[in-house]
Image (cartoon, rainbow, N blue to C red; front, side, top):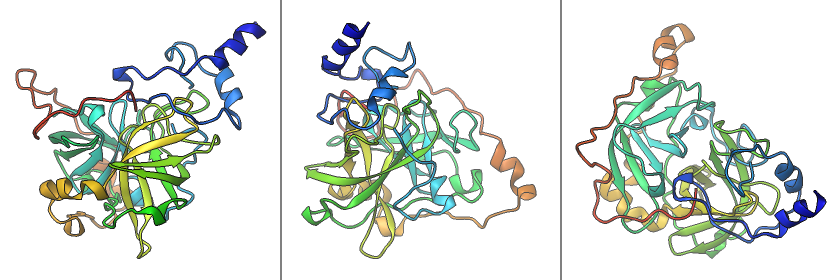
Length: 308
């Protein structure tokens, strides 16, 4: 038994399968509490997988999000996303969102406050980034929700070492899944369309956090979504790569218009009694039209990568 345990650790971590919404082999070390996470992994979760954000927190510890902005981080089936305007969600191409698929709002993906269907799906042909227009207003469906604006500045080498905050609904170190959590980590690399943060063997995003946001504080002290999770290290405690907003601004504005003029659609908070019906009943879903392939509204196809 001891021999088998040793072999498990020296075998290279496999890449994620295409449908895993997960990650590629990386170089983060097996530091901190990884050993206990491995030994407590649940059976049946996939060969070589370590069982939300690993060692995350229920609220952000670095970026000053309001309660309403925390609600803006939501979930697809097996992926995550962010409400960045009243009816718009930012996520990743490899999540393969289709028209009719539901985006759900709430701390627990299994017990959402509200769910809205994807009405339009726009896939970036050059990077792992998708914009989805929803069938209705998120701020009306979930009382108190506040979209998190997109980051409108440029990332450069001065950002290396600056802390960012990631979020999502993916796998957790205890085998849990589908609960929103946050992880504050430093930016360690900017390369092309990718921004990399590093959990340094202590924390990180994981399988199912795909498409979730990484957020930074801009020069005016405002929190902005700087990227959507594309892929990361298999141990869920190392380096995670996000598709950058700043290098894809032209594509984003071609769909949304000027980023600083987006409709946040924020409605005044309502009392529990007034908002009970809207805030507690998820919208009924209609299956997508199988006769029509509305997989993308843009040109080209960005092939899914090996994870998240």
